[in-house]
Image (tube, rainbow, N blue to C red; front, side, top):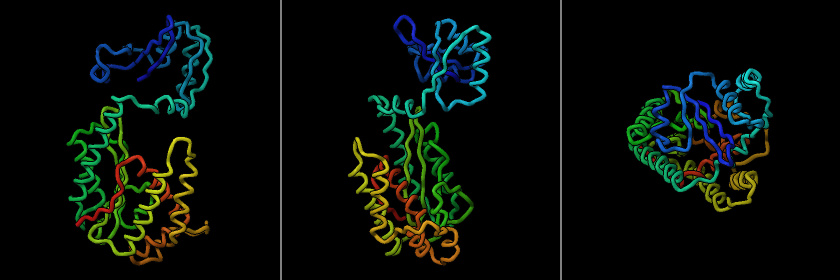
Length: 307
């Protein structure tokens, strides 16, 4: 698929180049009265862009800087073959992001729908998890529920990380069996009509110990205080630093950059002690502060236990 915006007679023409595999999907999603001109012309994307540039007398073509280098090289060849001379200013990713940042009412409703599917999936998985299940079993159930309840895609591959695996921010679900009395970090999201949710939650299998609750509440406090501090004009680093300070002031921070989390994991025998030790590492400060950012875009932070 390739999209192109060109000015013509003071209006912007929106072209969308695709093929028979996706044509009907675009028609259904955009509607037959869409302002996009959709075609299935059997030419390469680069030749198609060059033809549109020739037809519309376009001599400046802004390109998102995330496109593949091979595409850019071939585009120059296609433009030369079409006798079109053009400049290629870069439209940096942050510019494109800003253009898409403010959502209209319809987009907001689609985002809410995606989040409602995710919320329902979380409620379901809390009642589903039992000791002895593997991380992969939980992941499959979670994703299957989202698809069965309205999702048409996943925001990303779901993360289910139990016990010591929870110390890895992007852990890959494995055949490890969850155990009574340990934390499980779940990071997941549903897609709905090209809009996505993203939610991270920590649940406990059975009853948490007092120390686990204390550690959890430290993160909860950091989340709540950062949510209060987040507002228009505040720099993201300031929110990050605030979360680190709160965690450090609670006794779970350190300036020792050489603390190796792997050695900590190997030296601790109990899950609770491992969590406490991990939270005292510099790496854990980074993990938890980023966890706070994740929670800011989802619904309320809750301590859930699953038995």
